[in-house]
Length: 83
Image (cartoon, rainbow, N blue to C red; front, side, top):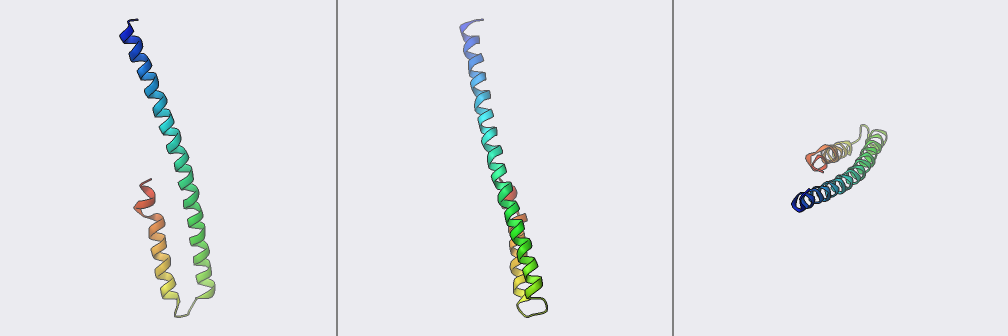
């Protein structure tokens, strides 16, 4: 192997290692976001359950419905999917 070939091989090995590190970091970030999304969905479910138990048939139900729909759009919206 020529000196140029060896240098190129080391360069490729270094690039592969950098890509592996990036993939690992992205995987960790994905796991963090998945946990946050799960917790948010659990809170949304709790809020909907509380709304049904406390506000069913009362005037405040419309406001709670609106807030829950807005929260649901945030959770399921493009912001979360963009990560």
